[in-house]
Image 1 (cartoon, rainbow, N blue to C red):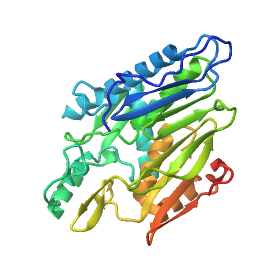
Image 2 (image 1 turned 90 degrees about the vertical axis):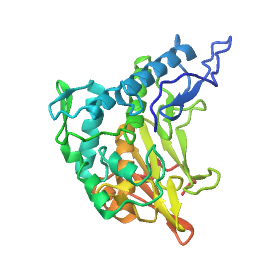
Image 3 (image 1 turned 180 degrees about the horizontal axis):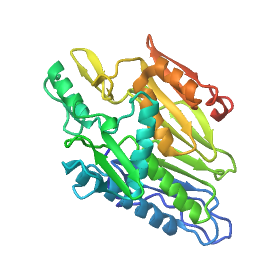
Image 4 (image 1 turned 180 degrees about the vertical axis):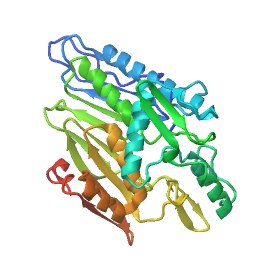
Length: 339
């Protein structure tokens, strides 16, 4: 997804003349998608303008650090560099890469932030579809240019290093989650305790909503039709992320090919997992693990989630029907009366 600074904010609820705190709602473009921030019962002295300033500052900072669409961003400059020496970066960028590499090592490499050459080779990237599928030789050549083990991170002082001169890094799978976490920290610093943040489906909530209840987040049915809830989760000081293939695919010769590439094979994933939902304390962690488990599929992904005690819901398409199963750690987040 493209990382761009927020340039507009809409749907702002202005506080009235009485002393009752009026909820604040902001929304706008961010990172090639949209964001939404809802604040219930804002503290005295905090209005929509103060929240908007924080949101804009965070989005602009992440854009300058992690956007693969800006030539002057830190990650773009690192990608252009052919040096295998340490490349100084911001602490934020080092933190995100470090977290991604940790999940890569724990997930059999199914989260790999260096996989972009394979994504582009299969026509699943920003350049669009190709008129043919790559050959086995082309896949092998591209695989030789990727691999999370060829990327190192140093946090003090913050720097990245590539073992292959042509290695590139794409943070689309983790940057949105980290952005949400930064916003959480900034809003908390303002004394805000009841809020919900959503950037393109990466959601984190804290406290209670305007009705004094836990924040309730709909899990979308993983189908091509208009969005409908499949289940409802309720959050307090937690994040939820969904990763799925139901709207990101190519149909060729009557067969559907996922946009998600399995770094272990260099090819699109082939399984019947429609989507996976992950809950975690941070949006960065939920973002990373949702991608990793989605690549693994329903069986391998469920086994790993059970092993690591990850709160996860797996929705599988079976003979035109949707079936699901969840880890025991996910069940407490399900709202009463839902699946």
